[in-house]
Length: 246
Image 1 (tube, rainbow, N blue to C red):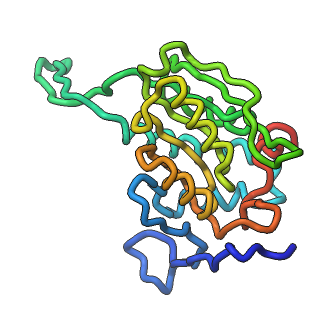
Image 2: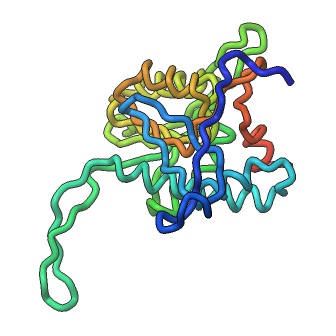
């Protein structure tokens, strides 16, 4: 398959514990970096890279694909929650002492871009008990090749919540951009939206970050680019198919 001109050479670096010399570390492909302040890329740790290697492998079966994807999703949710505001909160411990801590401010909800985004709902529920989940269905119009909104079901009070938008793959960014427009039409401020994503193309991530500079993006990896069919490369194939059917 021929490569699209936007595809770039992937960065590599020696990976492993800091106490090991470089000569004793394997070299691995790591994420592209982006200069946009509203984009957070998970550190390319040995754990994350090994998980990504498993789900990228075409020979990984569905059960293992789900297991390792869920681990990455959990890392993304945990990092996403770090970007929510907190307020001071003092508690008394069982030994009668006080501890000056913090607690989350405000209510949150998840919104998955169907169907692949639904794969990330369980990871959010594991971190946020009884969290409300909304749905948005956006598909490409075969005649215009542009994204089209087919369905949305969101909490009635979503304008008063912090929204974690869920979609594992960010290629051109068309679906994610339309999803943010839907949320904004419901009264959700841009700066209350966090987009959680497993793998992004540089083009999609930059397009999204510049279109909505107040929306925070948390991604596990920024890949090389897009091919002529707008597939992320090296990518991992169709995430929804591999998670739900293959």
